[in-house]
Image 1 (cartoon, helix red, strand yellow):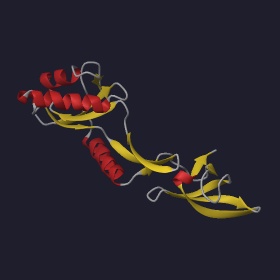
Image 2 (cartoon, rainbow, N blue to C red; image 1 turned 45 degrees about the vertical axis):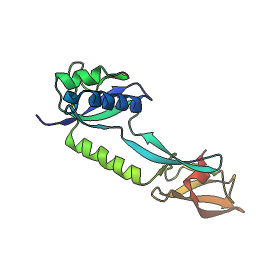
Image 3 (cartoon, helix red, strand yellow; image 1 turned 60 degrees about the horizontal axis):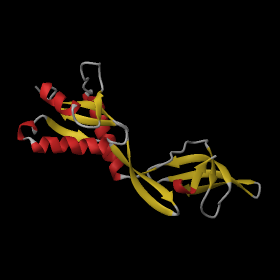
Image 4 (cartoon, rainbow, N blue to C red; image 1 turned 120 degrees about the vertical axis):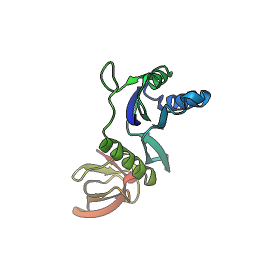
Length: 177
């Protein structure tokens, strides 16, 4: 039987605790080592400004869930189900449902890309009204014309001396109105 990916539901905020508990249970009993191949908490790096300092933190894609690559049988089901913090599997009431290969590939791709480049904590859209909170245009209001999330920069149309002017700002310099 081949290993497939399943989703475990955990108490929110306990994902890393559950992952460590599962890993510890696998290490403690050599017979259980082959039950689970991978335990994954998909995260992305997020950049934000707090008190003037740029901080990079991790944010979970799916709070309250862990992805597990395993062969589903009575032993693996029992091992996971009886780990503190686990509330159950995603699926029917009696049988966990595995993820499609395409879904898994997309999640793994997103996780890899997100680890390489931090994204702004707040995502902005074209046409959205914003206020500048930092820099030379502080307290000016405007509308987002264009976004470049890879660089974390936005083109914002603001009114200076009654004339519309396009300025390029970093995501941390603006906030939604």
